[in-house]
Image (cartoon, rainbow, N blue to C red; front, side, top):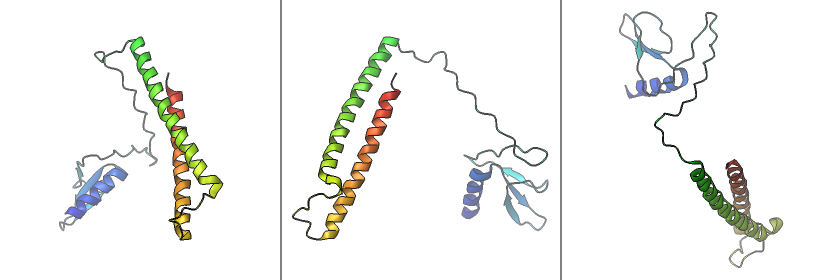
Amino acid sequence: MLFATSVASGLACAQGQIFLCVDAAGHKELTDSRKHAACKPLDIPGAIPAPARRQDGAARPRPAPAAAATPGDFPRVESSEQKARDADRRQILMEELNGEQAKLNELKKEFNSGEPERRGDERNYAKYQERVASLKESINRSERNVEALKREISNIR
């Protein structure tokens, strides 16, 4: 039964409606189409409804969901308050950006164009290569962080 439930939930996410069909011999079958009148639709939580089909069998385009309107009792923030919040946010992001750029510059300096100096504990060349690869990953991650912070700052009004 556990297997049937997991199959049904997997199919529900992929197809939409799932039907349990029982034939005259009592054999149960899970399917995504109603084969006969004895098929009962299953109510599976989290199921995504299947797109409606046209007469020719092609799926009908689903209309885009309407944008949710802001409720009338939703708290409003004064313009000056919002500007102050945006300024604080910009300042925090700028501090993070400056810190991340300093970290990136330090990593690039240590990386030394792909040939960092060997340390005393790196007598084994494999250890040295691991550190070089780790530095390269750190530089890439730091560059992505800098770009993300710049994007976030540009999105502030």
